[in-house]
Image 1: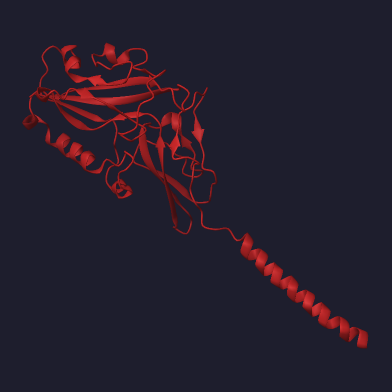
Image 2 (image 1 turned 180 degrees about the horizontal axis):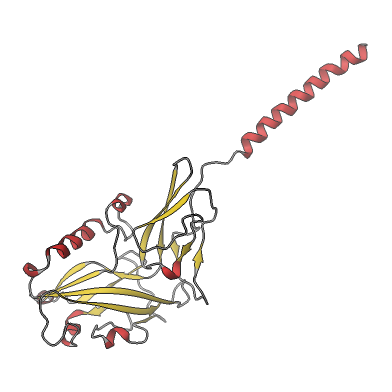
Length: 262
């Protein structure tokens, strides 16, 4: 009887320790809040026989969305189809779990774009400079890169420099981009095919640019003025702009280059 009495406290102690360690283990194993990440803030196009897909480091139940328009993302897995997305832009990716809690991240799909801008030829403002990886201060990787691969833009009358991607707008007009006698509200969409010697390993990439011609700023169409002003105010597709800007602009492409003759 005494032996049983001595064993009982020991059993109680062991049971208590078991419960204590069990509680600690459950706290340690409890998952933290979901953090959306693709491993890098810049995603490069890659040479691929099919579509190039990039997935989040970790997936979680819920819905994935991308903003602004132009990025193709799987709503269930968060996988980004880089091959079918518009590159050269910054995107806000949002994951919303079944309870409505959100996790966000921003990614840049590597490539080039152009600033939406008025170019006044009478002020010698006649060169459109490409923006690399959504930041105007970034230096283009020029050595080994090719712009207007295949010469399609040049054949259309758009003077794209093959060594640096710059567009000579005055020369484009002389080359007949808008015809021999341009009139107000003339417009042309041009595809610029290029390969960059960077993390993309010279994978084939493409950018569509929309060019307009007006004899003077007073003749610019009102809806175009409004669109351009919104883009100038927000610039959400460029790095360094406030994420709050993502609430307004849905269509940053194609970039609008508005040529003013005088």
